[in-house]
Length: 382
Image (cartoon, rainbow, N blue to C red; front, side, top):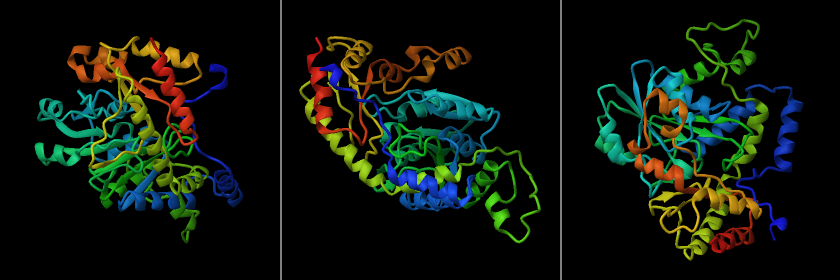
């Protein structure tokens, strides 16, 4: 049976349309950031109901730019959930600021309001919320419990197309940072995006993205004197997306609604079938939110499960099904554990999620038969 199955944890959904878009971009002769990136930015901004969207090389560089444009620097503290991918905290370190880790809610996997309140100090400049696996954090609730001078920034790596009470991810705080890695719902290979309604923030982030130049390359080349180089009045970076990636993004963003709908149907089937596996808990979906379904992440009950999480993953792997932990807990990773003298007991929720979360395959090339096979294997585990 296992020889007949090879169900990957995630598979990007790309095809002839993306190939034609790449060829068109190459044929145009404009390969670096240009008109296709701008088109992608405009479409992404429209989808997420924001005034500005800025494409970057990755979500990590988007996070870095977002924090810099928000004025985060040495002496500042940024509250970050511990159960997230390491780049969330790394981007804070890049700025010379201190990531202050806090715990998460094991029901939603998202940042815990109770833990946030405990971690706020006079040096707290921002809270970097993470809409993990595609489920939005209730940012308005957080805002109601903190001082107005503390910025809310969003790590939307998993959340393209997600929303809460009709407000899209990336519009809930000052700015948001998205990912287009191949494990995400839409992809440009690598790539990221910053969203914001703040025009001044957008202008500074755009400048920082392009080495600190006062005008963009496309503006200079299309201007009256393209032979004159711009001035550089701030220290910037080269975080620009290529037009080849932008062309792919234009095609992919047009499919986002369909991709989410298809993933949601598979997720609903998982939830239905897994209700008969007593030691696995399906993800919680509050009724006020549109889940983006970047991943389908369950929790194994270590007290009733016949095997621990890692042995469950091994059994699935042996039978042709890929799985992963939901993600890792930053406080358990050597760099942060040593630098900030952290222990597992400091973050019981994040520790439990790191040890017991199980991401099952979810992507737009899966079928209902694939889901049924995955659940069948879980039923078989003794």
